[in-house]
Image (cartoon, rainbow, N blue to C red; front, side, top):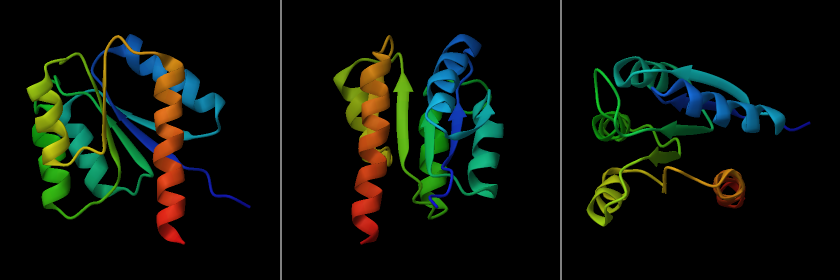
Length: 128
């Protein structure tokens, strides 16, 4: 029996967090939320998640700092950045500090789900 994957959503916009949660819950994932960077970082470091979905523009601690600190603590949980920052430099910086993928808002729910499935396929292949 396959274990249920736990995903942490760190997103301050309740509408986006709800949209993401609805679609991921339909796929059978167990979801946890944080609405600011500081509480998101705390949850990410204290728990094991299969994936972290991380906004960049967060109150209390921005997403880049959250990502950096997760990687500094040697947590290698995949991180998918979901953000309104669309500049190439923002994307490059996000990926270079440790994100595994980067999607800009507004986003296609189908593409978003496909990218999450691709991350999990990659992880399963890596375990073999």
